[in-house]
Structures are given as structure tokens and as C-alpha cells.
Image (cartoon, rainbow, N blue to C red; front, side):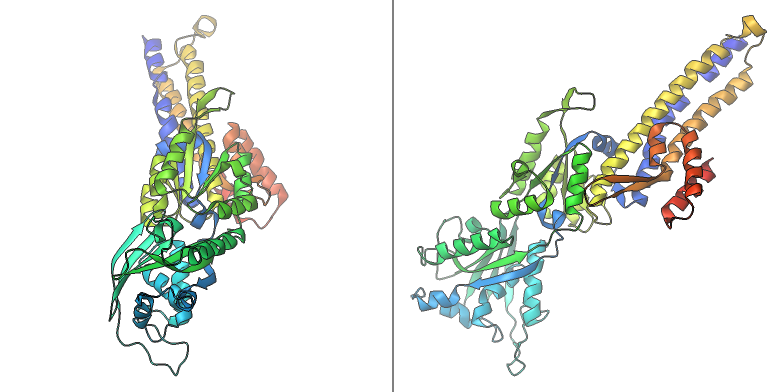
Length: 493
């Protein structure tokens, strides 16, 4: 009877029940310390199985702090070539603030349309306008101090954002009102495909100018207007925007490839711009999708998820896809992917739709999130193996395995201690995840693991002692993270 009681006590599956939740709880806490907001344990599991990562370009691969590089206006050309037969353009220019020059009319209209936009390209246009006219675009000051300041404020209404296409607003002036559109070609021409004012001249020239900007790595944005006297939009200018790449973009892509992840880039920008960026950061041209709408991004995620890829043991498994983005245009794809990763400095919609938020907005943290998920699940496996092995070893002794040889049985009180030690050992094993220090990612994409990361994946506690003494032998290297890891290991031990 006493042996039966000991068996029941030792075989209590508390350790098995603690194996997963303790590791997940500590793992999410470690993620928070390292700038990762992980929304639940299921996210870690999905991140562990990720085989494909799709990244957005603007604000993700690039800095998102775009600047206007080129301004091309066609107002003077339209007036010179007699394209203002109905007088619509002169009437429109008469409503311009006195401090806005004719050569800057396209930029000013674009600034008005982008005033409420959250897109990085819209911010670049507004910042360029504010350098010329001051903070208030609707009441601009003059670059020439002798010129009068605009006293009558114009009004903007019917502001609209169309994800993947552009923005639109209505400017109400003294003499007339006009609609302004800023965005891609089909959007600014009202899907008409041509500028009816001078189809053989302005339209073709604007397309050539945008193509030239894109070849040089700039993003070409069209500006068009439509007054009450017209039935179609007419292009009046083109703006070229430069969005520098993040310093860590190339090394992040290389590090993801080193982890065995297939990397794609999906953007709403033109093919020329997208391929130019992909070449710089090391993404294969076959893995680049350009001129994609927000719904198209979600469709790409869906198609990639239907693929079958090789797993860790060479078997075909489902393709788990992660999407990295920052803007309103990415919200649908973030929600559709298995793991949505949002840049912390992105829009509220993107952050809300994501499963993991990079609080520090560092692109390297994409690699860290996948690396941490693998560390956590290796620890979960270790916990299960240890709990099972411990019980399989302890149950025979509790059942009286040694009684025929030593005339000794395990008392129920000692069986309770053994059961408690099993649970405590699993909790201690999970707490060792606190020694995790995110790896250093080199320029070539190789990762240098620091602290006791290798110990966390090796499943041998004695290696933590070895790691501790080895770091002591190395002396003071100036790395505070190693000292913090030592202190945590000492406290746990």
C-alpha cells in the first residue's frame, strides 16, 4: 500500500503541466526586455514554424524618413502650349495664396492633399512644403520677406485615403473649388489612362519623367487636379521622393536567409523602384512583388501559405508565413499572415493588427523574434524530456524496485519531495531563459550568440556553470550584458 501511494505521488504530472506555460511566460518576458511585444504564447509557436518572411518596403526596409529629391511641374508648359483654352488653369492659379509661386503650384497642391496622411511619402511632401512656406500650408509665409503674408485661409474638405493608390482632397478657394489627387498613374487620371488636355505631350512626358526617377532609385508620385469646369483630372506635376535604406536592412535579410527562411519583398511601388531596392539588400528578383495593392499583399500571403516546403527533418510541411510592415496598407497582410510583425513606429492600425511589435523599430529585431521563438521551444522540448525521463526513472523506485535487493521502499514523504523536485526543476529550467541575450548580427548576416544562449539550447545545466567560469576567465570585456547574465545565473543557481 505504501509503495502504491508513493507511485501515485511520484507520477503526479505537475512537471508536464508546467513545462510549456512556464517557458512561454518567461519567453514573452524576455522578449519584452529585448524590445519585442509578443501577444501570447501561440504567437511564439507560429514564429517557431515560420518558413517564409515577406517584408514591406516603405518604412520597413527603408527609413520611412523620406525626402523630396525632385520636383517637376507642367503648369508653365500647359499655359505656354495653349492647353488652358477654357481658362480653368488661370482661374485655379488665381486662388493660390500670394506667397505660392507658379513654379511651386504642384508641390503646394500635393501638400494640401497630404495634410492628413500618415504615409511616410506624404510626410516627405509636407516637410518639403514647410521648408518653403512654414508650418501652416494653408496660410503660407513667403520666402521673400517683402511679400505680404496670406491672410485669407483656404479650406480643405472631403479628404480621402485610398490604400495602394493615393490620397484626394477638395480645396475650396475664393473663386472656385478643385479636387486634388496625389498617387500613382491610374489614380491621378481617374483610371482614364490619359491626360485629355494634351495626350501626346504632358502625359507621355510625365510618364518618361517618372520612369527616369524610378531608374535612379526615387519614387515617382503624380499630382493632378480637377476643377468644377472639367470632367477629368489633369496632371500638373511629378514629385520624386528619396527614401534611404535602413543601415541594417541588408544584414537582416542575410541573417534571415542564414536561419533557413525564404525572404520576399512586397510593395506598392513601381517595378523599377522595387527591383532597385531588392538588388541593394540581397533579395532575389523572383521574390519581388511590385505595384501591389493592400488586398494584393494579402493575396500573396494566401498563395505562399498554400505551398508545401521542407521542414526540419526533410518532410513536406505547411508553409508558415510572417509579414513585416508598418503602415495602413499593410494591415490586411499583417492580419492574414501566420505571424504579423509591425514596426513600433508605424501606424496604430498596423500595430493593432500585428502579433509581434518591434518596440524599438529596429529591423534586426525581426531576426531576434524568430531566434527567440526557437530558443523558447527548444526549452519546452527539454522540459518535456526531462519531466518524462525523471518520472520514468522515479516510478520504479517508488514501486519497490530495490526492495528485493535492499529490503527498502520509498516512503510517501520522500516521494512527495521527489515530485516537488520534478516541478521545481522544470520551473528552474524555464527560468534559465532569463539568461538569454539577443545575438549580435554582423554585416554579412552571421549571428554571434552571447551570454548563455547556447546553454539554453543545449539542455545541460552544467554548461551554465562552464559558461559562467569561462566568462570569468575572459575577464572584463566591457560588455554589461555578460555581467547581467552572470548575475542572473548566480541568482538562479
